[in-house]
Length: 278
Image (tube, rainbow, N blue to C red; front, top):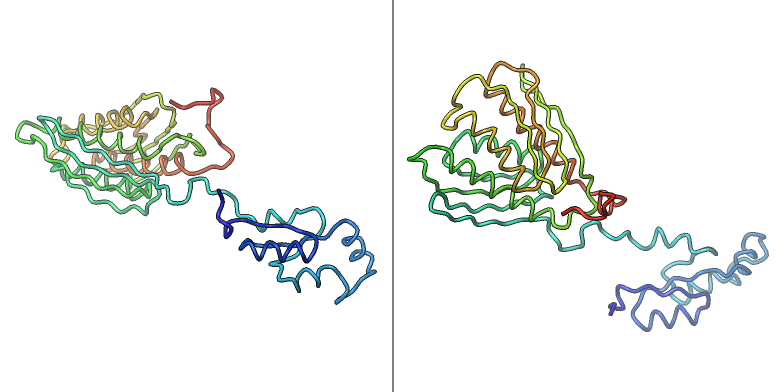
């Protein structure tokens, strides 16, 4: 049922208003067509007019005939139900890595990430900041072997948390793109929250490592993230000489594009002609 405090009673007589008030609801008066015509023609004036009588009965307000003012009185239903957070949490434990990650889509860009790979931490922080996502991620991985398991598994866990945070994939824009520069480097990201995992990544790296992570693994991080978050993702470096700048501009563009793609759109419903995104 509905609590009285969340209900609205509409009536055209003082007795209606008194009944609503005694029941604990909001009570609004409405002028009948006859009373509304009297007001329009100037045939009645306070204190004889019905508006004055309804207000005297403690009406919260009085509407003209037609009820169009209801649109101003009743708030629109939120796109995300009150109290529901678009948040995903994943715990991934294998013989190679132990990872805990949470993602909050409607955040402010707060990021606490400790993967053991400094440059990967830096890239995930760019994604969080420019996507306005709150991300917490910790990983204990077998870095004594190499960077592969840690980088890949962090991306898979992060993508899975992102997928969980998206929920039913309704009332979102779905498609987005972004171009982000960093000095001489320029990267483009195009994203489709399609539920069909696919990734095309070409960052035009010209060196083997950036910090402790191999450049091939940076591209693989993006591919792994796309697959576990069930996105279609196209990431291309268009210009650049400095490999750090190429990577950072790409992760910034990913954050900007995802921020747009997950943004709420009341008119979208399920943003697919199939009626489902799964």
